[in-house]
Image (tube, rainbow, N blue to C red):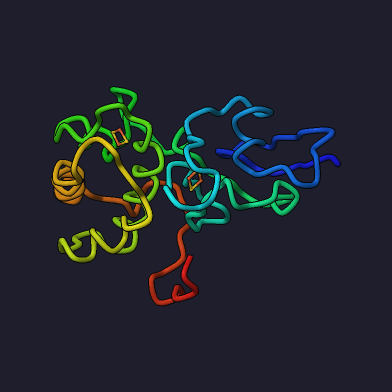
Length: 173
Ligand code: FES
Ligand code: FES
């Protein structure tokens, strides 16, 4: 089947997509966007987290056919500043929250989403928001520090992404 969707603000198309193919495969193997990582392919690790119509999803669990006509934003599509980094990415670097980096793209999207909904989250909120994003390297303390740092610098209202208000949530996404 042919899939057409918006990815990081651009209209993209892929032909001969297999019905059982995932959004993650579509992004990585067909559209040349390797940032979302394939670690478990079972929705357990969060390394493939991307936005789908403004909601974070595990791209490995979304059938590619379901993104027809929809909007996908990956970590490559977050707005960056002069140094080429989004402020969340910069906070991860500054806090030493990146080791092998495999979990980082998914975590950056998850933290971006959290700070859009909760610009000044407490540690319990951070832990809850990131519960679906596993990291084998850092022990999580550096990640917590990165989120606190990003929150201090946070002005996520002008980041060009259209997010649902927290009050609209509650469906477990
Ligand atoms: S690769 Fe998608 S959740 Fe692990
Ligand atoms: S930095 Fe290696 S898995 Fe998180």
